[in-house]
Amino acid sequence: MIYWQLFLAFFIPGILGYGGGPASIPLIEKEVVDNYDWMNRQEFSEVLAVGNSLPGPIATKMAAYIGYTEAGFLGSFIALFATVAPSIILMLGLMAVLLKHKENPKVKNISIIVRPVIAVLLGGMTFHFAKDAIFSLGVTYTILLILGSYLLLEKIKLHPAFVIALALIVGATTGLYYY
Image (cartoon, rainbow, N blue to C red):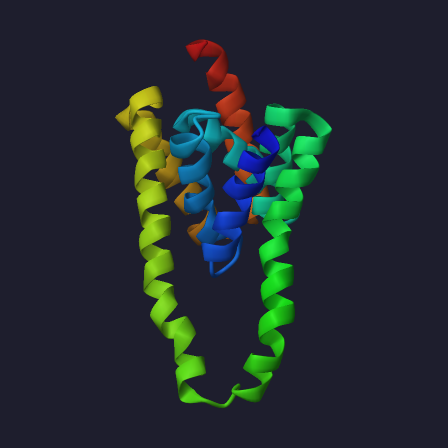
C-alpha cells in the first residue's frame, strides 16, 4: 500500500504542477504533510532547503529522499518515477497538439493565465515557511535572515549557491543551540 501512496503523492503534483518544480512543491507539501502525514511542515522545509542546495530538479530530489525514508530503495524509485511520469506522458501526448496549434493566441495565453496561480501557490508556501521560521527561530532572527539573504542576492549580487551555503552554515551552527 505504501508504494501506491508514494506513487500518488508524487504523480498527482506532477500532473497538476504546471510550471515545473517550484509550482509543484506546494502540491507535494500538501500530499506529504497533510494527506499522508509522513513528515511535519518543519521537516518538509528542511528537506526542501537541502534539496535546493543540491544541483538538479528539486521535485525529483525530494521524491527520491521521501520515497527512500518511507519505503527504502524501491520506494525511492517509485516516487522518483511518479514525479517524472506525468511529464513524459504529457510531453508525448500533447506534443502533436501543441505543434499543430502553436500559433493560436489561446495557446499562447495559457502561460499568462497560469502565472498568477503559481504566484499564489508560492506565496502561500512562503507564508507557511516564514510562519514556521518565526515560531522556531523568533521574529528578529527570521527578519535578519531574510534581510541578509536579500542584501547578499540583490545588492552585493552574490551567487545564490553561496547564499544557500551560508544559510546552511548558519542553520547548522544555530541549530546546535536549539536542540
